[in-house]
Image 1 (tube, rainbow over the protein chains, first blue to last red):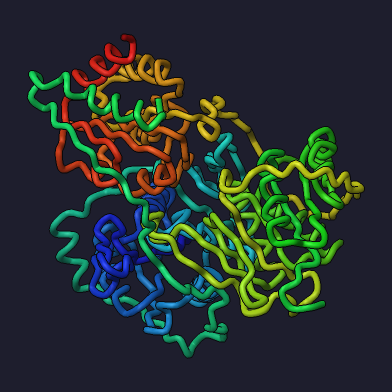
Image 2 (cartoon, rainbow over the protein chains, first blue to last red; image 1 turned 90 degrees about the vertical axis):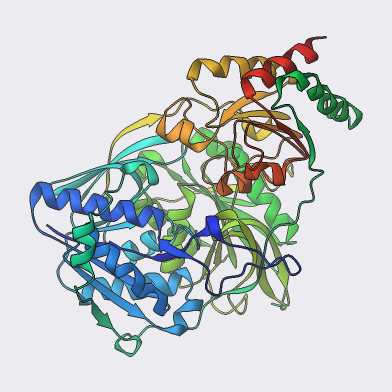
Length: 256
Length: 317
């Protein structure tokens, strides 16, 4: 089984700070990590390989900071990692991303199964896996919470109002949800070995993809909702009666 | 065609309520025509037909149950049967994959996680949740509106951000039978228990990780009942512990009640993003540094197992 996993090095959104004046996120030098759902896609691929044999390779693209994700990809157990990094990719929209990833998947070899996280932790468009499947003209199983693969792929897909069990012939694209597994934590020796492994590098000039984004971000800001921040501290149980102050305020506001 | 003038907006949703919300979005753009695509049962198609000028109906008897690859082909057949400049799709787990694929088929951009849509200088401007819901971005969708025929820009609108349209357009219904090669098989559909109707609730009490046992939700049920509301949970309580079929938050159900009460909720960023539009936020947490307090109108630092019974006692008086 030749499995390709799309892995993004995302901003760690939990740790993003905002400029108190402009309310804009401070992204220069902001911490990054392997996108949460992509990590589960990689884990899923490694488990399938452990069961049925084959190989797991990853494809990643982004700004040069993306290179930092390679060590972890190898430490988890991938066989090879393919990378495309360029400063111009900072503005890549989901369409450009999907087109480049689809090309990278084809250029990097044969494939039976493509696994992606359903959405990246930062961009959160939920579009890329679906677009890759359409560009490669193969079926797509979205939001998998379980996946079994032999000569077909059978996934339980969380589609909001129901869990759909979908079955598709290979090759196909499966996007995975956070619930699909608990990713392994690499051992220290695996991490040490990983730092010696090389990645395969693509260059932006190898691709005939229009890099002009159709989605242009005009501004990004922290939403401003001012809150009263009226606090009572009843951690000392003798002050428990003070919670009444909150009820009184809510009644004054006509919320109750 | 004059710049900035929308001739046709097409909407696609499986749910009658969301369909009507999308019609409202079309109306807010002063579109000359709001057409629709509906895939499903004829009975529901008859219902949504009332709200649009023309409905393209594809029966699930002809095409089978939902699968994004096949349904995107079906929606594309409706797009080609008409001439929309904008295609609005429900911003849900089912809608977004279909929208993404149609956008590839028509060669136009797609914007997702959208809460607001407007026209600016003849182009489309959306407000969308970004950075996993922490931030809101303004995004220009495509350069021009009218460059090609039957190539709509695609926008996925999150449910609950626009009112359901009441307009009685009573359009004609056109049944399409697109030839779609079925490659995905739907083996089984397990419907989830219907949630508590969080979208319409005035008061929502949400249990977070501070709640130790599933049985303790009973205490929150009692509080919610006294407040005239319902009980929801955060993602770990639903996805990991399976105490409830769905969760409140950006990745689950975003809500905007008049009163939100978070009990033992620390305030994980995606959760905050999903409750941010609540009118009043109350938080109960033992940890004075819990991030939710920054986003709360009223914060109670204390042991929820003492605070909640006390709140119940006061409300009963």
